[in-house]
Length: 516
Ligand SMILES: Nc1ncnc2c1ncn2[C@@H]1O[C@H](COP(=O)(O)OP(=O)(O)OP(=O)(O)O)[C@@H](O)[C@H]1O
Ligand SMILES: [Mg+2]
Image (tube, rainbow, N blue to C red; front, side):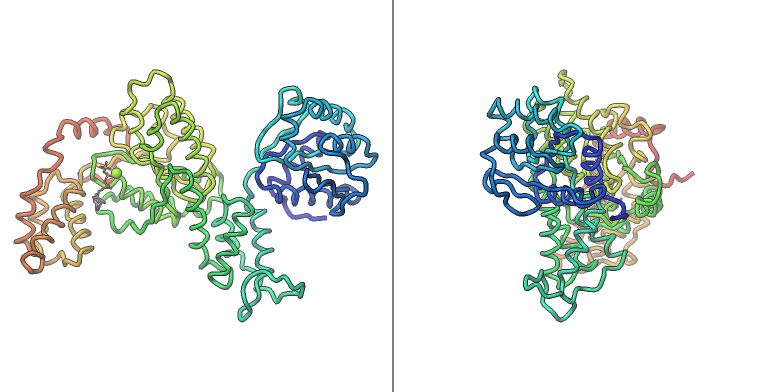
């Protein structure tokens, strides 16, 4: 008897069987996996092995892997067979939804089966990628949707795959010759930890393909294959058309200023890393960044992924709303669900209030429902998924959105102060190969009061262009004229910035350290 903890999927199916419900409908596209789980249940049956019957319209009926002698006649025949069978067993019917939908006598027979098999140890399991349970049999059928494999199942898969890999020197890949392979040494616990998380969210088959592809590329399975595995997940989200994988190399060192935000992130990183061993209440869930345009909201969202060591996915809110409000609800929830599948990751909802500003005339309640869904989802999403949301006009968001408890923190990112501007200049100059100590940054900082980080970057680029045209190294001679060419946003949009500021004053935490 296996005493290890079971996967959630196994426990769920076992639970239905233990409750004595003879008619079970499992929705899953992973038929092999369902069969594997049911096999486990039959093997571990109380006091011995339980017979397992598999039926499909193409292969007929097999009992414990062997075709039965007198084959039942079609879908109706298999139901009769189960009803007349006089021993306990599990009967798994593949793609049976087609027959349920089309024939009244099949639906009737399923009801007969329910009453005929109660308390007899005979269980009929219908496995199908779609849910099709007509009203008249709804009460008799126990329905469950098979979740993606959990870490326990993936660990088993990983161990099984490792056993097929020859030790260094041999060729990679599964062996088909039946000889006992000299398998790769057992994986250390920390490698199992990273690899199972890297394939989490994939189906069993997808995970196996990903592991095999990684093995083929690297010759073995170790932490170095994580990148290959993550590429498989990127394929997955690309299919949705709503989510974009963002290759990300933005470290916190590329953010000038915003010290409070940076410290917060570094502290939360520890908690996030221990998310499997600490109470879910204290696992960081998400961050809402609001503030003046061009001051580093998107930059900071990228840095979050970097600090947490996670892949970054951007949910395209414009795309979500592009097909009209009527479709937005469905698209938004499917984007969120797709994100669950690539967990652990950072889900970046950029300019989340866009949805509202374009649809303020919405009187259908769709927006409220979308935000309601989002807030519930925030509470229920997997612990490995961290949400980074950004907004310019946060005053447009519903109040529940910013209430404490949904996001861990709401940060306001203001125009950089003098010291921060110097830092931003230094970052952008150094990044472009200019030594900042050769420039009068103190004077430059005085002249750029009210500038955004984006404008500072723009000035650096202009200086670089003039220097290159003059075939000279960048000096103050290039930078000072560049400053004069830019009209900062703070001047043209003073009112709007003041509005954002006064709104944020007592509602958000200032991302920069405030100086007295
Ligand atoms: N604090 C900063 N440190 C370094 N660079 C910055 C900073 N703020 C802005 N920048 C530069 O300006 C660019 C634009 O900033 P970012 O995209 O993060 O602004 P944003 O707040 O998201 O603005 P928007 O609301 O317009 O989307 C960044 O890519 C970066 O190069
Ligand atoms: Mg942005």
